[in-house]
Image 1 (cartoon, rainbow, N blue to C red):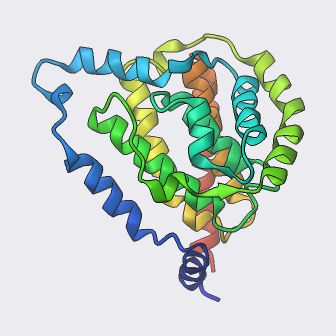
Image 2 (image 1 turned 60 degrees about the horizontal axis):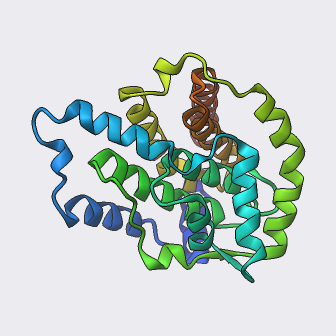
Length: 250
């Protein structure tokens, strides 16, 4: 099957047409005016965006896993809305970590359609962030999407040991790479990763790499770790190379 036909088949199976992504993003941009884009408000805009990225007091991966686990304890099948309630709707960094965890982890991330579903949410949130919103709005059809509680808890349990190892290496460094305008660049890169994630579902392991890149970018924001942002950029480059080779080599 050609790669374009595979993408089409995968989209039909998940009942989440990619056309919705464009429609939702356009609705967000034109839903209401964004005063932060007024002339002369640039510094205030960047400062507010940085606050939005680091809200909720989450500083490492284990804390994000704790929030995911809390959502899975209190619900049956765990909706993305329930997980986002635990993370917070004004916290781009933690939400990026949440998206990366879901896509990168085995069991949950390997479910067909889940990476695309999460990528749509990343794209919607990143669009709002770049457009200047100080809170994130998501349509109900996205928030109601859910994953198996059992599979989610197994994934979180599997991630605990790597999370402890990763968190030990987190520390503020090269902060100029994750504060101010560079943070907005990260939001733009996250939007790009979200856009190509549906294609990664048909290429083995590439979706997991995309999730790892989102995870690394999110952690770089909440831990103010510029070195991790560089690692995330390397992973993003690897995704592009892998996709290019897989789609155009033969």
